[in-house]
Every structure is written in C-alpha cells, then in structure tokens.
Length: 60
Image (cartoon, rainbow, N blue to C red):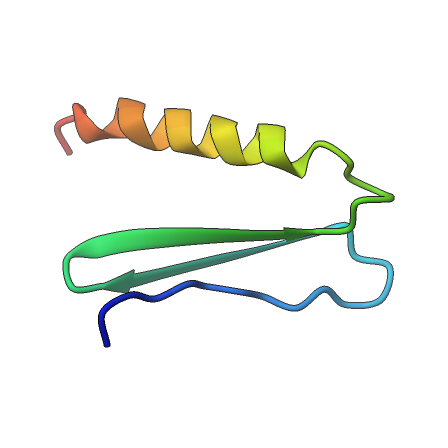
C-alpha cells in the first residue's frame, strides 16, 4: 500500500463524519459532509490543516 484515505459513511440525519487513521508514520484525516447541512466543509478542512500545522511545533 502506498497511500491511505480515511472515508467514513454518513448515517441518516448526520451532517459530518470524520475519519482519522495512521499509516507509515503519518496521520491522515478524512472529512465527509452533507453539503445541504454543512455547505462549508472545505473551510473546516482548511481549519483542520492549519490546526495540525500548529501542533507540529508543539512539544508533547
């Protein structure tokens, strides 16, 4: 396997599903959203990316 994409199905009346998995030293996040209920899921994806970039410099 060279890449992995976490995809979670939406349940009935669910607006957002978040999938997170790790593989080969990386953490991968997948967002699946109902565009009628959550039309700006792309904005959320950008915010998740920004937050993860902030965490990279954090000492745990």
